[in-house]
Structure formats: structure tokens, C-alpha cells
Image (cartoon, rainbow, N blue to C red; front, side):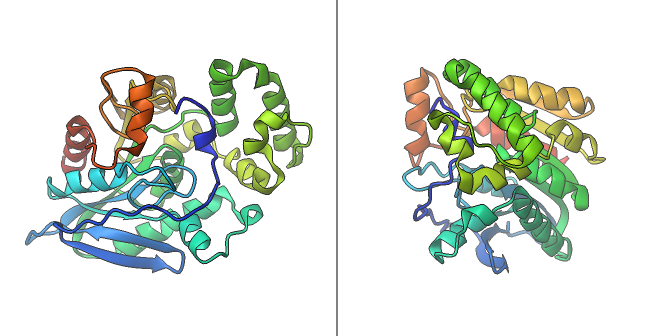
Length: 309
């Protein structure tokens, strides 16, 4: 999966689902568009809660999309459960809109995802079962989460989060994967930023610049992760894997440079979906569709220790 398309992919279908049966779980609807699963450890005292925000595209509460089933967010939540940390993970709103056949791509704005995360945070701040609330954001969810966390979270964790504005991330990816498209992409992004629309983009960039999703990309470009992470006056943990072919370690370094007091962890052999990769890019790519491949214990331990501290 060594390409730039997964960051933006808005191709829609029925989401794969994995059920948690051996955990104390509860399905909740926070708003008409936010459905998710609460895992609540069976303790007699209040527990920490982690709100888990997924990656880009129509990502469900388990971290899956159509024809991509790896359960990375489900396994993260279950790992935290074993450390007496509750969690709420949820389907992105576009998952429900797709099921209801009410999705209009041109009306999707990046701020919609932030509003959803804030609504979840406000909901659980009123719940006395939880001693503190941390937000965990994965990839695109990192930027969503760091903005939402400014509304009263007790801590924030970025996993595979970009450290630049999204247009710069894409241009950097293209320079490695499709250098012939770099100049056209840069010009098109500049046009989009200046005018709110881009016309003269290469057909090879249509997955990013087609008319229907330009409003979403435009609104995403308005948020700079380095500026947003500085606004957080709470404990911050930045994590990346050195086998991540979508978000490079250099992006985590940019976040760390912007927030020097943040804790920082690069997990050896971990890829974008938290799985251990011993071999090459083919093994990495195949891991995206192995439904029962566990996430790395080092990730669970690092996140769990940070939250429980």
C-alpha cells in the first residue's frame, strides 16, 4: 500500500464489521451520525477512557473499510481494556451516511469530523464512570483529535499523525512515488488554497482533485498540525512506526519539534495499522487485510502506560 491514495480515498461501500463478544461492551449512538462501541473494564472505581478516532475515508469503529479488514482499532481498544482503560471507538459519519444513502461528497468538510469528536468528548465528560479522558487519533484522526482535545481532554495521543499541512504531505509522498506529478500537484494545491477550486490538475491526480471532494481537501488544508499541537496544554504522546509507508517518521519528528515537551516513541517494525512487519513492502501491504493479525504489544504498553500514569 505504498501510495498516496489511501489518505483521501472516499470510495464508498459496506463496511466490514468485527464484533467484540468477550468484553464488557455497549453500543452507543452519541448523535444521529455517530455510532460506536464502548468497552468498559469491570472495576469498582472510575477508569480512564480513551476516545479512538480513525483514519481517513469511510473507516468504521474497528479500523476497517470495504475490502480492507485488519481490525487495528478494535485490537487497540481490546488491548487497552486489558490494562483497565475504557475506550470508545466509532464509525466515521460517512459510514452511516453511506448506509443511509444520504452521502453528498461536496458537503463533507474536515470540520465535520472535528465536531463529531468534540460531541463525543462532551458526552463522556458528563459520565462519572471515567476518571479522565484521553483522545487517541490515528493518521487523519490525529489532526482531528488534537483540535478536539483542546476542548477539555486530559491527554492526547497521536499515532501516525502528519506533521505538515495535508497538501505538503501529499507533495512529499508524490516526490517518492510519482515524481512526475509533483509540479502539477503543487500548482493545483496552490490554486485550491488561493481560490477554493483547482481546474488544471493531471488526470493522475483525479482521486485528490476531482470536483466533488475539493471542498473537503480545501477545508482539510486550513489546519496545520504543528500549530494545533502547540495549543495543547495537556500531556501529549507522539507515536509512529518505522515500517509505516504512508506516514513517515519524519512527520512525527515535525510534531515533536513543534511540541518539545511531548513524549515521543518510534516503534521498531510497526506499520501504519500497528502491525509488526519483519519483511518487505509486500508483507506490509498484505497485513492490511489480515483480520486476525494482532497489533504490536509495544503499542498497547506505550499507550496504556501513558494513560495510566
